[in-house]
Image (cartoon, rainbow, N blue to C red):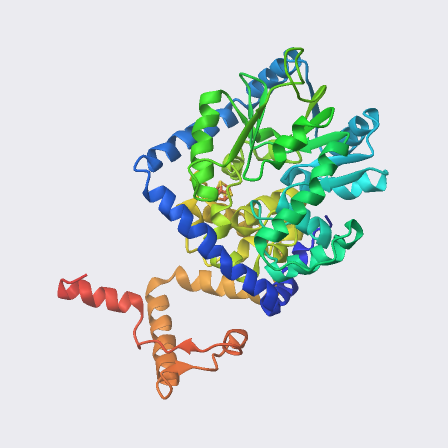
Length: 475
Ligand code: SF4
C-alpha cells in the first residue's frame, strides 16, 4: 500500500464529508466500546491481568533474541521451517518462493495485518497467484479493492448497503442475481462463495496473534472459523508474523488471550482460538504437509531500547481505536497507511518515517482514553509527544505552527506574564461572546468557527479561579 499519510489533512476533509463513512463509524461506539466496558466490569481481576500481560511482554522484549531462537529451534524439531525477513521486500519474496515451490495458483488467506504491511496481495497477483481473503471483513474490502480501516474490523467503514452493492456486483459471476439486504443473507452468500475456494487452494496464509517459544506454535483467534479452514485444508501453511508476537509459554499466551478478547470485542474468549504446531504428523487425520513461519522485522528491532519500545507490547486489540474521538470522526483510511488510530499514530512514523507521517501524532486531543483502555498499558500519548518533538526538531511543521509554539514556550516560561496575557485574552473573548453567549467568529481559529460555534469563556482563566478557590479554602 502506497502511504498517503503526508496528505492527512486532505484525507481528513474527505472522510468528514463522506456520509456513508460517517454512518458506518457511528456503529463503532455501540458495537465495541460498550461490550468492552461490560466485559471488563464483569471481571474484577482484569487490572491484575493487565499487569501480568505487561510483565510478560516486557520480559519478552528484554530477551527477544533468546525466545526467537528458541521458537525457531522448536519449529524445526516439529518439522516446520522459520524464515527471517528484515524488510517487506524480503518477506514478499520468501512467501512467493514458498508458493511457487508448492505450485500454487490460488492461496486462501486469513486476516493478517502483516500481509497488509508488506502489500502481499498485489505482489502475489503480479506473479500470477490469486489470493482469496476468507475473513468476511477482509473479503469485503478485497472486493472493494480497498485497504482495511480497522485492525479487527477491516470493513468497519462500509455500510450494509455498500456491502450489498458489492456482493451484487461481484457475485453475479457465480449466478447470484438477487440483491441481498439482510446481514444474515449476505454472510450466507459469502460463505457459499468461499467454501469451494478453501478446497481449491494450494497454500493457506495466516497471521499470528501469538507465537509460543516453548512449543513452536502459532496462535490465531477468529470469530468465523475461516482461519482454521485456511491453515488446515491446503497442503502448505504459511504463517506471517512480526518478531514481537513471540511469548515464552502456553500459559503466557493464555493470559494474553484473556485480555485480548475482552479488550477487542468484549468477549470472554474469541469463538475460535487455534494453535498450529508444525505440519501434519503421521497420526494426524488432517493438516498441512508443510508448515512455514515468516518472521518480519521491518524496523521493529530498531525500536528496542528506544523511547518507542513499549509500542511493541501491542497485541492489536483495537481498543485504542474504538475509544479515540479522532478515529471515531475520520475512520482508518485518513491515516494513510496500514495502521491507524492512536496505535497507528505511534507505529506508522516508525515504519514509513516521521517525514511522511508527522501529521499523525498531532491528530490527538490528548484526552488519554487510548492509554486508559489499552490492555498493555502502552503510554500512547507520551509516545505521540516524542514524535511531535522529533517533527518539531526536523522542522516538519508549518512555519506558523512553529512560531506559535515558540511564542507559547517563551510565554509559558514567564508565569507572571503568562497569567496576565491569558487573563487579558480570556476577558476579551468573554466580552466578544457575551451578546450571543457563544462565538461564531474566533480570531486565529476561523477554520473552527466556520463550521461550529465556540462557547464563550466565562471571563476568568482556570488559574485565576483556582487561586481564588484556594484562598477561600474551597479548592
Ligand atoms: S495500542 Fe493497546 S489498545 Fe491499541 S491496539 Fe495495541 S494493545 Fe490494543
